[in-house]
Length: 461
Image (tube, rainbow, N blue to C red):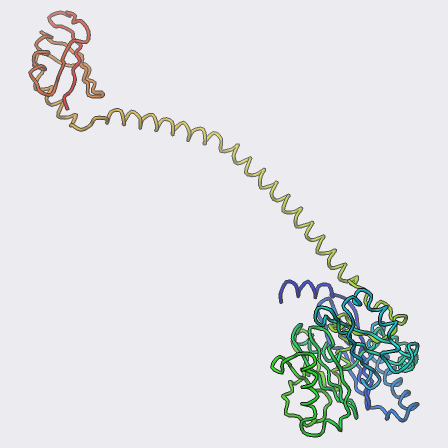
């Protein structure tokens, strides 16, 4: 999961229950989902057969009984409910408008609605989606439901204390179910949805319903009928067949050579549950996903005055979670600052404690540097051996003389000592090749029978 996907999911984090209701031609499917933060689970499901549509009162009573029994048995919170109605109730129209109409598209459609649908404006409710069509036009997909149909079902569900927040079609909820279970957010998906004597062929791309066409099932029974229908829709939407993932639901083996992808019937990965999700339940499960803020196709055919916070934005649970995370970040930041201050104090105390040792080390370093300097001075010009010089002086100085000091520095030797005749020592050193410019550095003095002398000479290299 990418960072953007995680943030998107975090915005949907909640603590809610959702109820999905699909009223099909021959059965009602019910699904109860529970969301706990980011985890969604299937809590309970049911499929109850219904009388035919021609048996109006009996069918309504069967719907009401199934819904009441399911809600009471499982003690379901019905404040978040999505209703799925058959595609045969809806009317679709695709309209091309100037691009400038996108700035106030709702008002334009309201004004032109009676020219776009075959029934009066006050007898229908609609929703729409649009996309650019070239540089100068936009394409609008108009979706309508008769108000009489909406009111019939709203009144029926109200008897069971259920007021849906959303009305959609099976193709929309199937698309949301696939997108959630397979974590699919892009690409083109096609749905062939069989509902009794009719088949809906729909295309969805990037969370947008591109088109929906209702075709009699008998027309598709002929070999190649579905292929021709899909080919025409793909050409209109400029979608390549290789880019299409096609799902079939309730088609009862409609003759086709097209490869259908099997709808995920078991809760995979993100959708938890104790039991398999039967194929008959998939539209209801998809509707319940929309009820718990996991929908991905923004379609709602419920009149605006009947919606109760359908698009309420960020949930209270998400706000609480964000607040908790902010508090944790503040606590973590404060603790980090406190730890840094404590560490700084500890380091400063250790520095003070080590200061005497540091001074001792510095003193030793200075002493080492001084000794090193003296060694360098003593070793300068060391291209001859000092022992050779001492040995030669020992041979040159008379035996009745002795030295008290001897210093060799920068090619110059100085010596002090006592001798019976100091001049004899100068004479001896002058004769040596190693010494030059031998002279007294101070006057000689007599001490008894000996003379005290101080000589200086340059040492030849």
